Image (cartoon, rainbow, N blue to C red):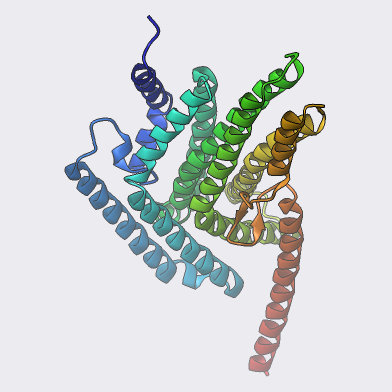
Length: 387
């Protein structure tokens, strides 16, 4: 006897939890996912425990950031001091936003899991367990590699002075690890949407090209499934929008500061200080990876939509009702519902990289001009004092 709807639902729910088991545990410990996602932890005691852990962690992080600013950042050169202070402030706000949303979503995220499974059952989509685990595993591996290298280079670049190394790790490395773990969930959601879009498009292609008489009811069903996925994409980007904006601001500032420091070291090379060279290159790679990943997974969803639109535009039927459904489908896919827009301004696709490169070049020129002017004024002031 075939399994009932409830049995299939329970089986899919358990399979999804098995696929994401380690990601959920790590995310809960990193305060980027609510503890209610863990099986057997839905009651108030565990929520209070998790809230206490978030408050304790954030309090220590904010205190360490203040201590680092007062004892380390404030002693740096003028330009470095200002940019490091702004970057640290962005991290403090970003981590607060991540933890605030984690607490706010404690009831909503489990419902999203359930709705996702119900939608999969309706569209007869089977989760590829191996592919899902491989995707999550690769993302966690990349974060793990960055974390290990960042810890090593932080110690090495600080000449193994434990006090300065711990402050550097807490104030700069840990926020990036936490935001990276938070965005693994974002990448997974967009990748899941892309996989489901492809499945719907393949079913549509089979219906249109492999059947002698395509069924209007099936085409309508595929159109509604695509509409649901487009709406879910909009919800995902709307939910993560402020985290994305803050991440872009933090990455932009740190990337340009590190790039400027690399430029200064190229002008005045210190080949013996390999630790700082490698540490700066690691930060450049990490920031590039974050920004490109956000744009890439959004672009992937758009490419699936474009592929479906190409299939729909490539068919024509003499039957009026069938052609009308096809026209509605094409119009739906062509309508811009701003599902890839965040903050009301940024369109998340690979074209946005061009705008970022131009902005980065302008900001880098500003840093050069500021540095030259500051150095000239400093020399002039020293000359006046000497006289």
